[in-house]
Every structure is written in structure tokens, then in C-alpha cells.
Length: 122
Image 1 (tube, rainbow, N blue to C red):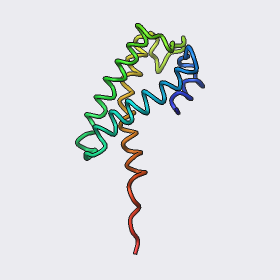
Image 2: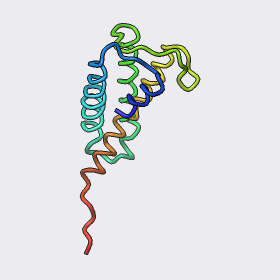
Image 3: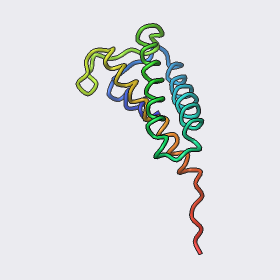
Image 4: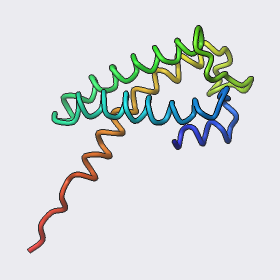
């Protein structure tokens, strides 16, 4: 949700409908990247060994979704503002898709912080 808020503040992309914002956050981040990739693949393994796999799978799914949006779905569109110097919409989609690789990592790290019991003090 933080990324969507920043995107709105900096006018990076616009959704065709508010429904797509909720779908993107709940389905893509929560269900697919968070539960599907993050927890199912990385939830039970040592982070050092699974870190690259989580990032790779998350990035591949992100690039796929961004590409589907660019060429077929059109649920969101890019503004004219450059994104870190990137101007063309297809290049923005590839870059943002790649950064989706961080989503499952963040989910697993946050889940482990929340679920790890505090140390017992004597």
C-alpha cells in the first residue's frame, strides 16, 4: 500500500478504476506475492538460501503482470513523468515488474519478525 501511496503522490501511474487498486494490493501483493511466493516458497527455509529464488520468482511474476497490463488489461496507465529517468511506458513496466521481486522478500522478513517469539529473559 505504501508503494501505491507514493505512486499517487508523485503521479507515476493512474488506475482506470479504484477497484484495480484494491485488486492489485490484495491479490498481487497479498495473495500472489505475499502468500504464494513469499510464504509458500520462503516461509520454511533459511533466508540466505532462498533469498535469490524469492526475488527471481517475484520479479518474473511482476514482469508478467506489468506486461499483461501494458498489452492487454490496461487497468493502469503511466503518467508522462519519468520514473528514475525512464520515459517509455514499456520500460517503466519492465522496471517496476523487476522491483516486484522485493515484495515476497519483504513479506517473509516481516512475517518472521512478527512470528518470532521474543527471547526469554531470566
